[in-house]
Length: 137
Image (cartoon, rainbow, N blue to C red; front, side, top):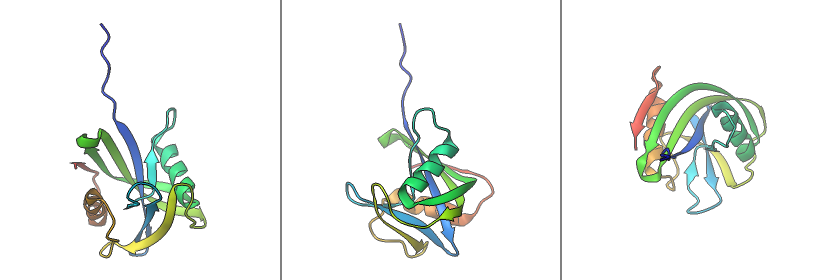
């Protein structure tokens, strides 16, 4: 008898700061939510490779990953999200691919069209804790 292992989607999301603002991208599909740049880790890809690739694909920015801000499980969506902080090392901000807008927002003045779990992740990021946050959302 073979037992199938449970499968979850793993995504990487990236906080990119510009002074006191963070970069959000507006998705060009579904309800067009504003979100952190990032996406699904592809087969054979490392976490770091996925984060760098997704940010480049969505924003044209080159980044260097920093600290792991949080690990968030969303059992209702069978998803795990890893959020990182990153520094821009090159490129010019231009929305690409499935992104229709990319803009920096003050963390205290985020756009209205965001999913609730993003608000908690932004608060975790703003807290600037040395340890990684682990939450069920």
